Length: 471
Image (tube, rainbow, N blue to C red):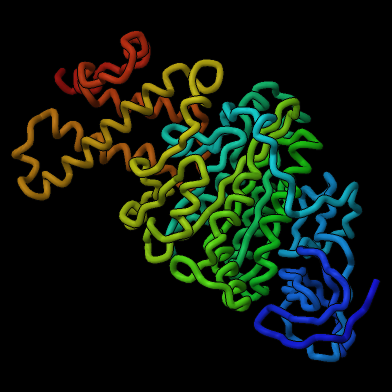
């Protein structure tokens, strides 16, 4: 291994050094500072005689006298089942005071693309316990379903609720404790504040969710370069648990906006030609490399499901980060400021939300045979109620027909009873659908034009309370 003392320039998180032999792209580098500190970095660019290195811990303490060693291998994540229950920093080092990790294997963090031919279609239901997701925008094993939020909205609370509650229902039915441990959560936090990190850790420890989780923490004051590594370490761990240890793994990545800001920062340091709003032109490819690591593989028991969370800058869904994310992922869960200001928890607006794989993951044998019809009918009724709210603002409620007033009441109760559930309530899919029938029974039977007659006969609740009052 050759050692060089040929640093020519330091720019932001980048170090440039002269070399006299070819160096591989993405190769890991150790830089020893004159103070005796060893920093790790990665080769970003390698041209004849000159390499640029991005330093994970930041370039503080490096000067021209620092020595550079090229290790001849790309970055690897030490993987083992013992990672469950551990908390690591953004570079994969334990920060929970526990024992050193003894890896079973070391996997390349860039990961290998899943061969499209051997991908299996995602079609099994994951129960999050959140009605707005399970009932209306169902999450399916192997799917990537982002949460689009905005600054100041409680997306972290929703993320923690999903991390705590998510299960694969058929495992619950077996009643076997061993089966239960088949589900794991990988939580990758990027650029979060120390306060948020403490909240996350308190919640994980208080609820016992940590036992089946691996947590990666990259804080706001950690270097931007490390932020690029964190999600890759998290996904490498997820792939190992899913495809080698047969776990169903849910990966929650928050906040993808901080990840993209780090990409932009490093792109600026490299003096690249910027793309839209200053983000690098390759951001689409870069995000796709992360999101496409979700899925199922034929012949493998496990699966990797992703819930990336991003805050839309300026609440703008046409901003490059949500825009590109929406192209790659299979739908989105939209959080809404108006619902949040009304005190609805979680403030999920189901109308612009979408789960493109929902139809394949619900129905008889998966959730319940009435799931699809109930969901369609509630969408239609809520959308009509929303439209009528605009009308009420102009003409007042008295001007509306009895039918219209029922739809207005439906929209209010839908938000207050179905979407609203607090962050500690875990609803089974049966509870969610029964709640749906309670609400749909406010409407006359003839209005339920998206539900099969036999299902209406079975589930529709005739209005008993009013009959009692009439007596």
